Length: 156
Image (tube, rainbow, N blue to C red):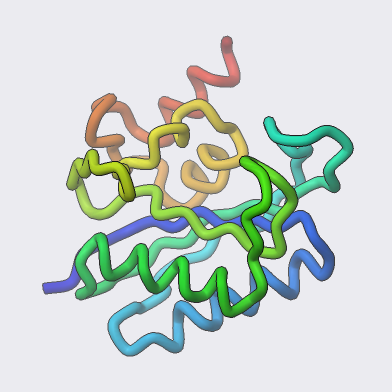
């Protein structure tokens, strides 16, 4: 059975847009993943991590998959590795970042996998693209829509 999921993506090492497009193409070429909808890419300053990083291009994609959450995570990590992602420091610069934001309405709290993404509701660079492509999708822990979470962040 196919599950509706959301993936966040970002890149702040050139060629940023080309890297994101390549990662999405890799996702769509997987026989158990269907990329349904893509947000527009937004350019944002780096949040957290080392200072003086390049700005990011960020966005989100709606996918449908028959993969389990763990299997999907492994696919995302493999794409990152294949594209040359190196994890030298937390929130450091990256050629590609693929985050599993939501997997249906499931809640997973394991050391290696947390769904929904534990910081998505605190990051406008995640909520803005999510509100664009899925404004009425409900955060399974907070019981608020993506649009409401974004509006609350903008008011604060």
